[in-house]
Image (tube, rainbow, N blue to C red; front, top):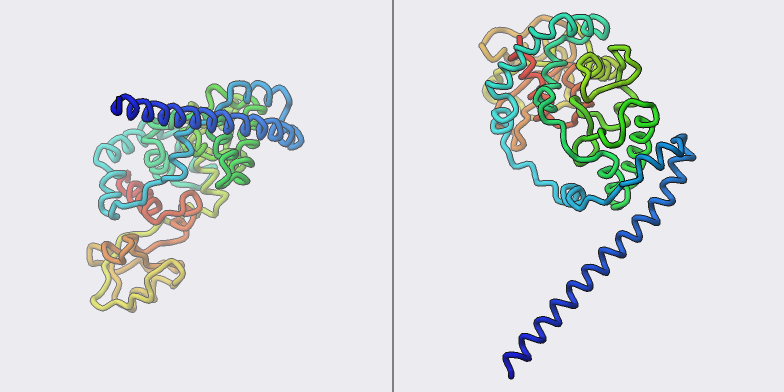
Length: 327
């Protein structure tokens, strides 16, 4: 009899937990629907058509996995070397070189128009989505709505959601086909909706800015981003360097800008031991590894432009290194 009573209490406790979970889920769903009603009004007042609002938001739903990824983003534990080995594999370099040859004319035309070297366009394409192979499978509208509703960065994602709806409104893609990362980055160059509106280009002239499928649009949009962000087509990104023994650590960092001759006078050399170039350009020395160890790099203006795309020194150095490997 005692055992039966124990089992009964356990059953009741489990039942209560299930009922609470269901109640909580229903409460969240109700809150989301209320939020959605208000959001539709805001979207329309910001210029999104009622047709797009009704069609694109018809099957919208919260995605718990998106909230999980946003709240529990793993700490970046890879060392700089591990990161480079992962994103700049021999395979990626080989494919990148073949893409440069395959699309030589198109890339050349875009390079001349935007004053951005083809190898940097291809390097960004390769690192962002492995040359279009991995673009993300999350429904962008539902992902952005989930993040806008969740509250942690609701203002930012609400703005991005409205801009995503305007992309649909403009006829560039349908809501069903608008796939991307869990955070809403889209297409083969992983633009957020705000970047799409600022930099996407209809280079093939078909009436839509198709960063999902059209290589002319994808390449031109990457080049346009870099060009409008201050890219200098007659300069590279930087280079790995050799520091002299006892080099002053206080001079390492992006804030310390000096001409190349300044570094040469301190004994800084190219990695192969040769003197630095004699060009009169501003530069800084960085060590991407978080603990200040590891390789050192001399960085120029174009490196800082890549940081506008992604603020990680790991990422920017990887783009530059892959671009060098594609030469």
